[in-house]
Length: 282
Length: 301
Image 1 (cartoon, helix red, strand yellow):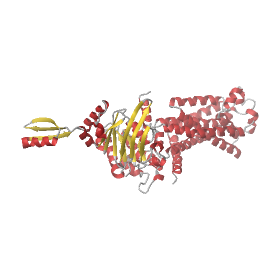
Image 2 (cartoon, chains in turn brown, blue; image 1 turned 180 degrees about the vertical axis):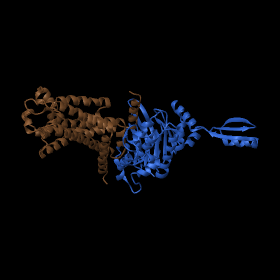
Image 3 (cartoon, rainbow over the protein chains, first blue to last red; image 1 turned 135 degrees about the horizontal axis):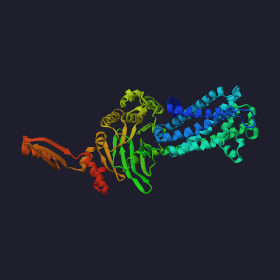
Image 4 (tube, helix red, strand yellow; image 1 turned 90 degrees about the horizontal axis):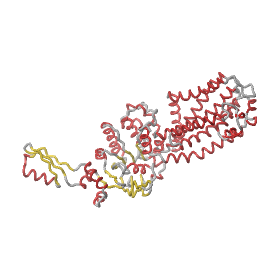
């Protein structure tokens, strides 16, 4: 038996167990449902508004873009948050104390969060398909594009989340991720076409994965004619692939070193110190 | 046989303070070593260096023949660490968690040791069979700590590290824990290094006690040896004709012989008490704080 393989398999089942726990823990499930519900409400609100220069529903465009945003929310924020929390509560130290435990731990996280993303995307799409018109979900090409954007999105965001989670010292500073992502989402064409923003903001947005995941999703699930309101009047598949791949490569190169550095510093006395800090209510 | 633990001239320096200033000791396979010492003496630092969780400043350390700073996963599989749980894995069921963590050890089975420990047998050993399907967050404090021990030994380690394992235990939980440790050393021949503040615990469990103070080992021996080396004096109590007597004697045996020769059968309620581990410990630590005199090194040697 190859130990690495054994740990990888243990990690996969760990992720599946954690994912099931997420779906059966009211607090976690509510967090997913409330986020999804919030987005859906905003979409329904703008259902009859048109995307400027077209007769297409802004709500439908938002629905599709939010699928891309979901990937970033869960892949970066949830991943980073879980790492911070589980470093604090000693889960990570336990993983460190068993052979190949870190590998199993991380794979578990990847499976768990991918599951959460798939779940959030599925319910958004399912409800959206009933409430919204104009979705191009009839052709196999749509689903193929959706699939590669989703997979590439996971690769671009999960390692990034792991890096950020390793760098943030505690839960309060990790909340910064939510603020930053919120700001980024507003300029990334998720809620409104990016072409109506000042050029500087357009350029900023295009440096980050949020914009490209939204664009990728729109290219998959909106009619081709809608490409006219995008930058360069095109879906820019090649650029989408390029930028998301660049983020994926950067994350995958950086993550192992950063994670190792973070794990190396963990010890029983560190966890005890954090526990005492929390117990004292600081 | 090769020593399971070997530490020579271990040093740890934080900034300008030497927390460990030349610590040396060794443990044979199957031996239970208890590390005693006042707060801040470096007990936790020492154990974390041996666990491979902390990098030392200088000195030689070997655990199962390997330097913990470079111990790979195969080495990790032969060691166990009992960590104090807090709220990790709160949603997992007890049996589910043990079975999961055990899986990682399976490839490291040898002809002599089948890894991991059978989960149901392990649950029985630590007394958690009735709680197998309970979620970790619903366990009581004592049950949680038993789970901590179970997680530490699920890989059937050859060396087990425990840092203050019974802090916060009630007396019953403490006794249960001592039973588990004894079963481990009897059945599994596990080498154990544990730190504690509880002198009674040290006396019950230890084959050998190490006292760490001022960054060095100031005493090394069984509880008995330590008491004897520290003070030859014993306390003798008896009563005669309804009157109670207490005397300190350098040679208790000779004193009692003389007592009987003089008073014969009128001597009652005889008690001879050697200096307790607590007396010894307090005296040793106080001496060390004043600057260790030469004769203490004789105890350590």
